[in-house]
Image 1 (tube, helix red, strand yellow):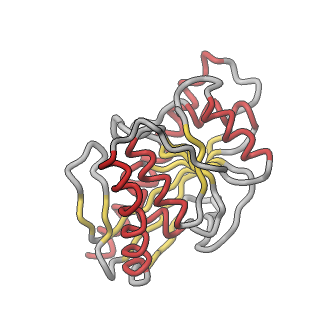
Image 2 (cartoon, rainbow, N blue to C red; image 1 turned 90 degrees about the horizontal axis):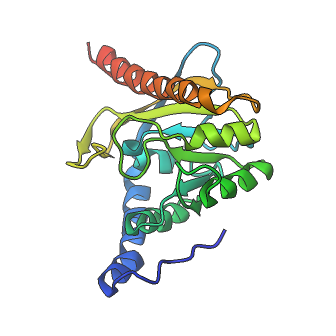
Length: 231
């Protein structure tokens, strides 16, 4: 899917877009070789393994762990919903270097361009990925987009979190995680959320809360797993 850069970007932003994604890609390809991934999952959940290609499923995680996710899931051919903002353009160009593609648009507007684009992606048996708390938060609060897409397509929603044992934590709304070299990273999976195609709109909120709880369980279990390993 082609990227259509926003013509409103300033000259400075265009320079950043031309340079920064390649620097980030090269740096994290190198540093990523030193990361050690460890997978855990709730009972009955079959996690996606490193390098494994998947089909038409929806996957959700918190915005803060974009970097380790980009490396761990780079062979899945997944398509990610990313906003049309400058930050979204920067992330899109970086993730394309890792082998991902992007649909640009909103995750919260019913029937919006972004959701319709991801619907076409799932119909081609390609996985669709959401940063569930969106481009601006609030942190750890799932938007409605994944629920609407699951209801439209019948695709299950997988919930996961990647927690580094050692990381720099940015002073941003999402507490963005930058894993340090040679760190261990726990890939934690929670149970899938199923959204029936005939689910009435008044029950969407309950499904959203179920998904929100699943991603949070994955995050908390990863943190507890690391804490117990240090004891």
